Length: 246
Image (cartoon, rainbow, N blue to C red):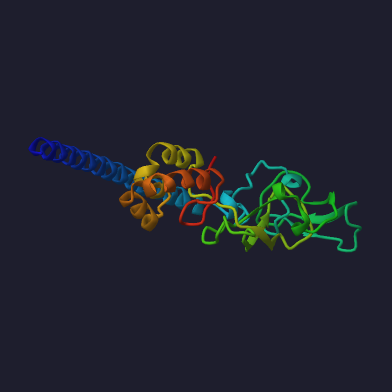
């Protein structure tokens, strides 16, 4: 009987030590995941600050002034932005057909060649341009993973290389699609390998469920299996509502 009690005591001690080792490993991995998330957010903020130095959609806003026009630029190559070049448009033209605009370079803009000329372009308003011909502001506060996908009103500007019927600045309703750098491959890999510790949810900054998953050892394996499916299908994503980077 004494030998049996001693064996049970040793088994309990071994299980206690194993649980303590498990807990320490989970704690370390969780801290590493939190640090990675903090670094990721900091990098994303730096990229957003860099993007703020540019115009809508991350492109240089060269509609702001005429300093981009060099002295040796041909007058006919100046964009019809209303600042460096003033054009009179024919709003009665037929959509999709070629039409001309009478353009004049202001006196304070230096260029080479005729300062008055006609410019031929396709008759369409700027808001009717192809997506590649304009840039728009982004929205990082809407839920990009909602069903149906959320929309937002964006401020868009026609590119300076494109001539179109004004106004060149207009609004469009766009789908909310933005990312803060959370990688789907990283999330699914963490779910496969360290999902029992909740590291996958710590990575996605789902703090409450991550702690619950850590304490319950991945719901004794059931939660871990479910998360592999949910993260793999994209049903579970970053807490900020952004989409994955693949």
